[in-house]
Length: 407
Image (cartoon, rainbow, N blue to C red):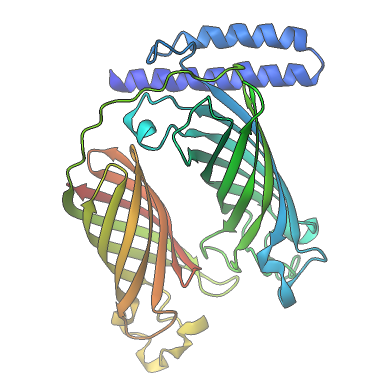
């Protein structure tokens, strides 16, 4: 029954968002406001009745937000002698459809009533023939620095987003040799930013801040220098029901009791060692001790056993392996110790940390490695996830993982 109820709520949210408000937008753009507003309002009110009444003091159960964002700044990789364009800058826009939470779930309260949603991103890199015109579809969460309140004129906070980009013009030795940055059409998209917001009216906010954008394919297709862009941004946010929630649920949350447990982890991935070369299999097997110090925070120390099928190929930095030793299977394995932090939001976990290779036969790359990833709890302690293993912040491979938390 819980699955059916959840599916019903998702259906309601999707229906309202896609039908009512994109209908309103499209009709408005065609100069038919007198048709758009009554039609969208009637459609919205119909679907609004389908959600459970969680906060009776609020007029609505769902507070959708539509925002448009523009940013301009510097493409960091293109500076200096590696510049491939006359202007190492970018100009981007994105559109987001989100929902302002009101505390229906405990983790909304713990994270100060964030906004979450989905968006579309497009960027101009001023050299379409070399880089293409990248776009991305992504999800995001907007977290206030202080507990959200509709009475405040000024607020501040940060956002985290991630998704999949497309429409890059990848490197090709014959047709596009100038692109020594990205070797794939699709790439991971990461969006981080800090903002300050001013309430102009009950329906309009204006925001300013700084935004950092990263594109990478995790070395699945070389070259993969990654693309890093940073610059100021300006955002206009429209609360589509022309008002904001007035009541935020505040449960009497019990004080957290620390918990300790083990975490087992298995990940697989693939990467190229040389541009245009073969893609090699990688895996990570991990055993971690986790300390769950609060509702929102977990800390972990993990032993990692890595398998890299490229280590005996002699390609790239692997040429340090003597030819006579390239049949030794022990070269394919290494051991690392990793320490990190996991930020918890309901079923989601966001992991970041630093590790050191403590045992391997040859120093192919840096002794240090990093991990940035996201995990989703699908059932009890069972989690699935995706993350980037990097070596001194250069992509090594993407880890597609499954694991189990034994708390």
